[in-house]
Amino acid sequence: MYLPKWLSLSGAALCGAVLFTSGCAKMPRTAGTGASFKGPLGLQLYSLRGEMMKDVPATLAKVRGFGFRYVELAGTYNMTAPDFLALLAKHELKAVSGHFNFDMYRTNAAGVAAQAKALGLQYAGCAWIPHQVEFDEAEARTAIAVFNAAGKVLADHGIKFFYHTHGYEFQPHQGGTLFDLMMAETDPRWVRYQMDTFWIVHPNQDPVALLHKYGKRFELMHVKDMKAGTERNLTGKSNVNNDAEVGKGILNWPGILEAAQRVGVKWYFIEDESDDVAQHLPGSIKFLESVKF
Image (cartoon, rainbow, N blue to C red; front, side):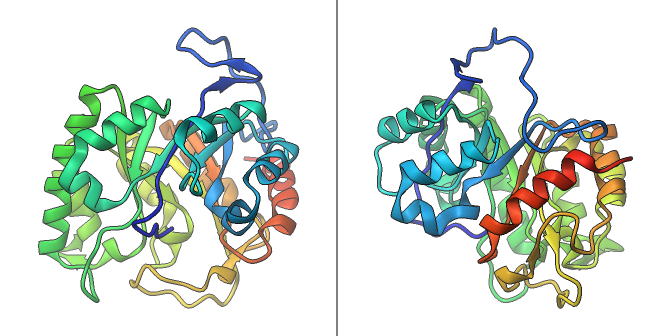
């Protein structure tokens, strides 16, 4: 997911319909979880960006109607943070994480930390590293420095920083990839990762192998399927309608989810950027509830 600079973020904090604190009891069962897949599962609200731009309250009611309790944020849609937070609370939704623009981490990490802390987020992440045509080593090293510095600042404020994979990081580098370089040189104390499954398969990588290779560095996951026949490359870009209903695309979900559970992924969010997301979500949820591994 690429976020334009004008998007601002907010969060909410609920444990079911009760205000969430660190002392909350065991999390309730969430939509999409079942005998094998345990979640917890939420929705990246960017999936419904078109509806959010038109009617935030109605869209949040729809999200809750699908059975979600948790969300990841991609903007407050011209609402103040307190007002957006109140709407999330009204609809019994808890914001766990959100994405901020790369330049915000580069120029004002303390400001990002303050926003995230004020908005009740556990995680603040980055989903896109600006780069020219093909992502290169110099751009990767710039990002590494920014992420290490920003991650330390956020940690000092009690917020966990993560980078969301987007496909272009898998350019070859010294027998591996630039993603391997990023993993090697970002400090695990300050930098975590969110695996977007679509953007691992798009550059012809194996999500299961990467989960086993990097284990607990992946604390979050975007559950996103891919239509058969989708062109694969290292651009980090693809038509949004190449997103498929989870379970109806080409990804090996039993293998991915088993590996993710084994290595300790803590949060899962469906992200479906397609025009058919509202039609896909019920089937995606049902699939995750019934998948066996």
